[in-house]
Image (cartoon, rainbow, N blue to C red):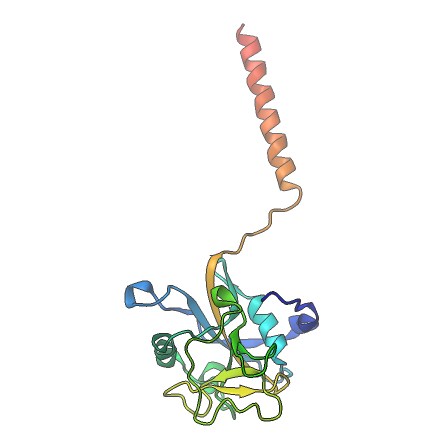
Length: 209
């Protein structure tokens, strides 16, 4: 499910944020070796739409790994995140009137058919869910999902509108390291140095004859 998010990232370079340090669910402990990061917008920053938060998550990287809105695909993963969830207020160091984080699930393509937005599960239907009682209810056209909705112990999910005003989101990092592009002139420089070395070697061989 590849989507063009260029319009969503316009002016987002000015957005500041506070985040708990990324933490890993290691394979040794039964996890997937992925890293996670709870991100909260800075004080005074405008709220984001869901697609803007999605774009920010997908432009993030950690230790060379690409980011995306977290995909919580098992009860074990949810439980692990619950143990590491610190709450929005403690991330920013001040009281906030919300405690929920946007995650990478949506039914924006087909109402009622939720699927994951990114990462290795991109486009896959939700095999695991953790809905709060009575949710999802699509009240007023709700196509995105937040976790820890009024329940920090279970990390309960709720569907919300795309323009609901995102103040916090959860990023997951996994996959192959993101390649760092080489400067355009570097291959030419390396090639030139190689030719110089070859020429010097030939000169030495010629002088020895």
